[in-house]
Length: 152
Image (cartoon, rainbow, N blue to C red; front, side, top):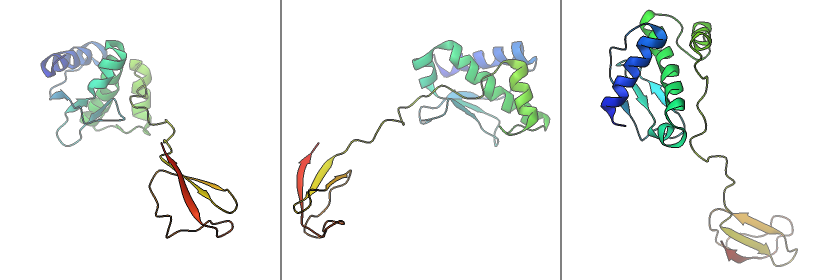
């Protein structure tokens, strides 16, 4: 799907669901990481994350579009357009729009341990993401010397 097709889809959803026209610009923004889309207050444009379409398909894309159109129409009308506003929450319910987007990134993964160190005296292990200079540091428990075991 190209930006022109996205523009047409947003205009159609706006007319069908809200009964109001979408008169501004919409586009895909691949720089968005964790959000499905965003409404820009400054120029009234809507940006959509292309991962929504790739990962979840058209149905989820339409949900994100309806959510952003709720922001758009309420802001244009001078009503509460923020997530915490009652006007926004009511319009979400009326249009059956999702409050949140499905997860787009795997941010909840455990960070990998890259470096493993061990105290030579008490055998306490230290797991570190960053490398450390074993000549500068001692064990925090017994003040013994630290050696590097492995890098994963």
